Length: 217
View 1 (cartoon, rainbow, N blue to C red):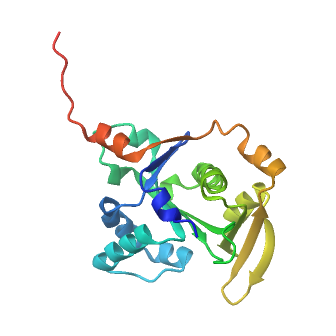
View 2 (spheres, rainbow, N blue to C red; view 1 turned 120 degrees about the horizontal axis):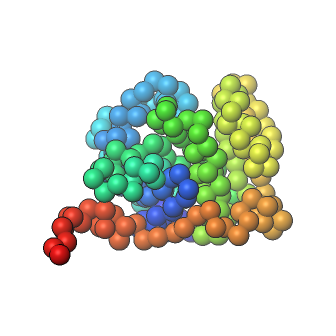
View 3 (cartoon, one colour; view 1 turned 180 degrees about the vertical axis):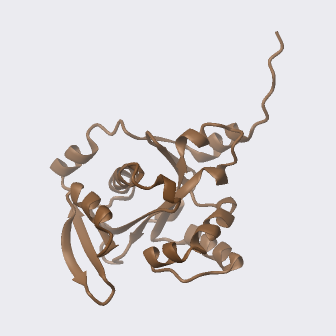
């Protein structure tokens, strides 16, 4: 099985509106603050955790062989080194390998946690970026998503990426959508892949944190 979580430990993905970075310990307090929200607990089917449990969860995700997590940052904010990275956080995105016998199948999860960032195309951009990363870096060919039946906006967005309904669970009030990324569909969805740049996260973070020195003329 691919060690997919460790593949992205120094990966930064840069799009038009967002920057995706690995989920690290510095992000945990803000993430924990989000997940104290009953709305987000319901949307993500999550149980409330203590801050210490959240740190444990982050460490386990970091070492997990079948999960890849990025934190979604506001690119415009992140471009300003005076703004701490934690204050640029707007959500997260995950890829899970769900079938030990089929490494080409993965489940995709996206959360835009900050309400004022919803409905602005960030979910669409992150979906495209993560599907591209999943196909070209992780070897994923088949994606699935589980979405609440009432979340019509997300269902419509994934259908625009050619996801089709696979099943409906009335018990959990959710629909499972799926897509297989053949060559023609990859070309249609990803084009020439000029919508995303990949950089080394450590170097980019060090540049942001470097003290500003006034040039003397």
